Length: 110
Image (cartoon, rainbow, N blue to C red; front, side):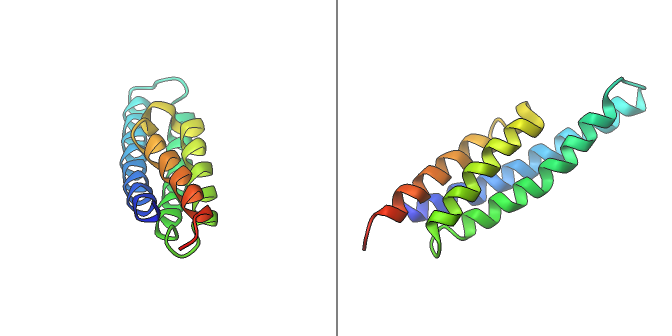
């Protein structure tokens, strides 16, 4: 389960970075056309970038410290959904599932 958590965490973080970049592009285009609230969209895109990076770190820690990794991935999956909602539709479930698997894997001995 720890290996699955590692893979899901890293894939979720990468998908989160891609989603963040897409949200930044949409916010930039929206801003160029004078759209209302474009600054908020761009800011939330920037907020979701470090969230995704911490998700990758959580995935990388899944083998060495699965409990900490699981908590990190769960929080980053939820935080990404709060920040950019639809932009995190792929990354969020991957990080949340990876977090759950890391927490379950931390309870098993051996």
